[in-house]
Amino acid sequence: MKKKTPKKTSTQPSDEDLPIIKIVSEEEEMHVKLGLEMEDKTHDMLVKWGKEVASNEDYINIAITDGLKHYIHRADASDK
Image (spheres, rainbow, N blue to C red):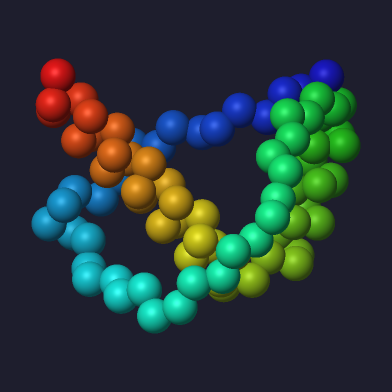
């Protein structure tokens, strides 16, 4: 069984690379984050399905969330 773990990337943008992004609206959504275990072939099938239905907005949300986590982690590390 395969447990999905977040990938670490080495292509994180630096502060100088980040463009200005203005928040023009906000929506609150209720969601539950699940930790899942499954066979490799099941994981691969779900990834394929996800790629088929993912929207550009999904990719933008993922990128912004990852960028913010990276920025916060770096800021926390520099404070210590």
